[in-house]
Length: 501
Image 1 (tube, rainbow, N blue to C red):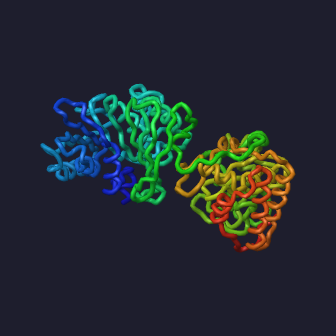
Image 2 (cartoon, rainbow, N blue to C red; image 1 turned 45 degrees about the vertical axis):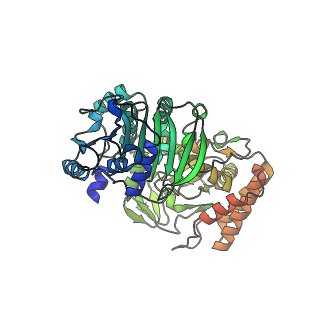
Image 3 (tube, rainbow, N blue to C red; image 1 turned 90 degrees about the vertical axis):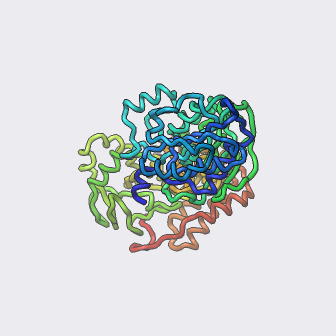
């Protein structure tokens, strides 16, 4: 299992392989001489997807199957599995498809179908040498950027391998649909092809710490079309959606689910504050200067796990930092400043602020009115006066912004059911146009922060939510309220009772 995970290799379940092959081959006629469909899997593993393609009705009559696989053992097993799949079996090449071994050439295939490796570009196995990445960018275009993952590069390469009118069917990490790092690649795909089919998992089909999706794209297809939609463990059809490439913005046409209209707005969070995110150097500098003390010098450190809607849980529950449990994590600011390259960040996050946790099921924001808390990466700091910080936190904790953020950025988090925002994405969320109910919501959120028990906390949050309805001019949003209320975290108590003020 660990070897497969290290290699980013997760074999395609037969049911998903069958649906992807069916969608990729739907009504496709061969362009090759002799009326034979040329079907390529550039990361074929043990041949599951090629077997599914061979079993499709469209491919029964003499498909030419070609697979490329880097691992010699899997390549041998693929040859055995595909020996009787089509006339003459299949051609399996043991190589790296991105190096374009024979017979991989631009425009020579009717279909490319693949489940490429899922490897982060920041991991040891997923890192591509700078020279190789430069060569890929020269061949494939600007969609290959510094943080473009290998699966996305396979997609860009596959679009070049198919002929005009040919199709690419591919399993990808769900982050491709929404992540900022994939923006250039999405734009390039939309310029070179047309999205025909979109499947979103959401149920953990693969035994992987990443959620997945499936796409079928026709190279240089029709300028406007209808996307066929599927979802879930069995890729059941869920209907269609209109696809308008010219209207896409940062991945909008790809997004999963029902896309709700943003609530009425008088601006954005970024008009009130400049959200600040930390990076690895900040995390390591903080953890190197930590101590565990309920009182004394130094600033309290708050992780994402120590933030609930309205509540700062420092001293209430333990934190996990640098693979250790900390009851009362504190950082020595003099030591932190001496670490270099973090002083400006520390100055920016010191002072009153709202703090937003990430990788959560709803947006969870709390307030540091005194300014003596240090947000640990990946907590986003939103500096503001104490009064304004409560307003910012109330907006971010509202059901409307949680639902909007979930719809906009689904697939970017580690869990398919969580919300992950960058600082710039948090800044782009709308603020309400009506001030009076917004101020009442901020008071209710402050009541939630001071609540001694679960009942008082939840009641205060529900009051906050209803005031935010009025503030956004969206009363009676029962479905959004129900969705949000069911996803609220449980009220946490621990070694110190209610959190300190």
